[in-house]
Image (cartoon, rainbow, N blue to C red; front, side, top):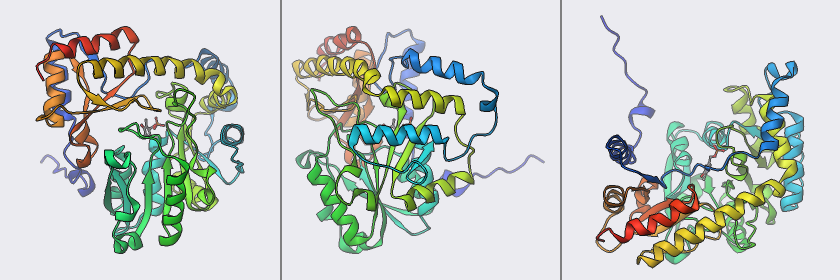
Length: 390
Ligand SMILES: *Cc1c(COP(=O)(O)O)cnc(C)c1O
């Protein structure tokens, strides 16, 4: 008798995978030899700085690094994080209690719900958003309440529109600025309003700060912990992935209120055994070098952003020029849904993008482009779209 295998309800109840159709069409086009320009995924094409790679090679040959790491991270790495926060944001952190290493921030974001969400708890999440926030809630049996991000509100959630009975039940609020997928940024006033909301309703604030280093034209996004009260109500997730072109390495960190950092670390210590120490040593070096190695890629992304935005506008598409992130959030031409527009771009221009509604219902009407290909290819994008009948 073959086994009857039934997946857990949490898996069976996952929302349908909205990118599946795009994936299928993309594979089909590739198999037909179409020269695709892939602006679908947010994954830097620029290699990790070689000094960081050198550190890994050096660390890999040390026998002390071949043993189990500590789940919360080596002191060396946590100190490097604390020093970086001090020099970059003027935020002083205790490496022992206010910093935990993550196997990429995605891991920590998912485990935040393991640590803090009970069945029935309400979690406030933006729509559209990076999906892990609400998937984490669902896996823990919590209930997501979605906050629509609208252009008229500069893609910031309207906290005053949250019904008070929902706010009272809320356990966590997820925010993410600079934002994926809308590329919106938050100012100090918004963060102050978030602190006030969190204190009024006793809500934990989780800020995903993955893109603070990808700011352009001299703009330097702030940390949520910089605002008064931020470090009392909040935990901030950060990552070396986007900052140092290290998505494949899997290293990030969470910092902030020691009870929140400690709770997350407790959940993690029961589930994982940390990050290969050689990677932590290399990550520490990246943080020590900081802007010295970030600046070159920031300049590349900024130039690419200009090429893409100017090109898209020249063919009549509507988008804001992002002040940060490597995304461009483009309105669908009149009469086309996100799915229609994405399909048209793929079929008629060989350009892969991501439909906005894949990030949540409120993303309908938009398509996300990334700038993770070189500038010659990006110039070609507008040329190709010009030939499409929109
Ligand atoms: C890329 C991304 C992450 C994940 O980063 P890792 O550290 O590689 O897991 C987290 N949040 C947002 C918004 C992202 O775009």
